[in-house]
Length: 475
Ligand SMILES: [Zn+2]
Image (tube, rainbow, N blue to C red; front, top):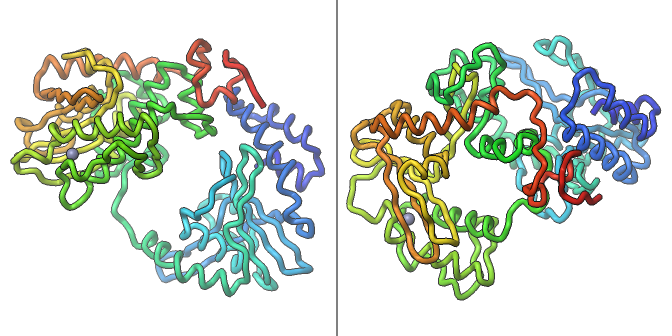
């Protein structure tokens, strides 16, 4: 944003703005630096033609509403353009990747709020200190409102709203107002990725605390947030895990096999989240034709392989047995705080439910090869299981200890295997703790996140941003 400000308000050219990125007080990770340079060029070289008659607007557009208990403010993060002569205003929302080819507006509430702010927001400087309200002028003369999103990967542009303030008002009433009211009313905490930056985390009861969860002592360091997937990426390459953590765009992220695994997971997730979660042959794809699960389209040979895996799942479906199962949660987001490691750990079990009062943490893995691996090897191979063992072993979810268990369902075209792990077995818990410690310690103690170039670079979805990548670089 500072580099774009230099171009729009400081008469700098693109090269000067890009050079300024290397002179900032906060040194960026080399991959983030490369992406930032790319993003500045993408933005500055592309979408200017949309607003020939508009000028960059320096101040924020903010809608304020005073109530007896609080002053509410709504604004949108993006770049602003206006024409006093025509009464036009345009807000550009910046996206890290590309917006080309996207047709649906998947977040109508956000678009409605943005359009409302553009139509009715008054201009004001960013308040300093942040705890102070915006000081606003008047908002008048707006006759035309446009909200667009710009993909910083390729400078692609998509119009989300284009109309009058009256139309913006109607869109807000239809899709935005109730969402805003709900957000203002809610006071139930939702632990997750935001916890690590939350100022009241210390006092929050909704975030489960498991001291020593990761087995590393880093009490004097700032809080970090991670997941088992992140730690596995770190083990492959610290730079890759860093790039994922700051959401740099990924290119060709899923191999055919990985996409098939995602499709199988999504198919099961949809059935298990239904009113009748037990899987039956009638609810599975035949495999003779392509099938779709969520955003995953599975075709050709994979359609048949995936259908075999799903068919094999029926034999081990947790809901096909006659047991008192309650509190079924599909892909819930669980958060745990380890004060010793100063880390918030996020987990998303494929399935979590209670059987006879105890929690069952169920993970499903797909493979096209006949799986090998038993006992503690499973915890090494699938460290999510190690996390599950330690969490249930610590009683962090509540419920009865003696009936809780961790399950791994291994699906492959030739069959299905179910492995059960007892989280009350001290030997398994000790081994699981060792797995987590070995995985988390290098990550927690690392501040540089340097690349580990090698063979994996050729499949790395973020190699484009990595100056050390061993993969061929393309523009
Ligand atoms: Zn099932």
